[in-house]
Amino acid sequence: MPALTTQERDRHLPELEAAGWTVAEDGASIAKTYKFKTFPMAFGFMTRAALYAEKWDHHPDWSNTYNTVAVQLSTHDIGGLSDLDVKLAKKMDELA
Ligand SMILES: C[C@H](O)[C@H](O)[C@H]1CNC2=NC(N)=NC(=O)C2=N1
Image 1 (cartoon, rainbow, N blue to C red):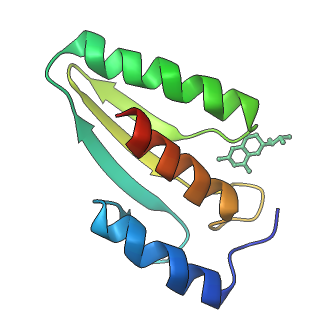
Image 2: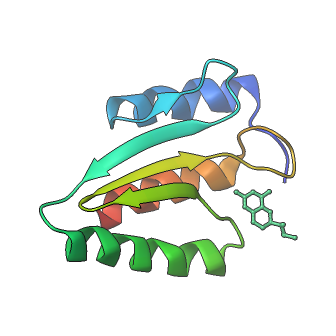
């Protein structure tokens, strides 16, 4: 999985930032914290996202506290961002 090119970063990252994702200072990951009304809603979101993570063999670094899910996405194999991070970020926004 290749790293996003400069042009791809310029195309995708502003859109993700507008949707509430923040790009890490080193540019190697993106993060977003989702807040739900209840724990079952937070856990339901994680369950749905987990099915895509497994299907795409691309897994989030995330944590859950009650109704909050903090997500960090990065492509560990390359130590940076790839298409899969953009794809999973968009899917998570769709599922939230
Ligand atoms: C062998 C397997 O394809 C890799 O370990 C996958 C699994 N899930 C992964 N998830 C993430 N976020 N980054 C990876 O590089 C990655 N690699």
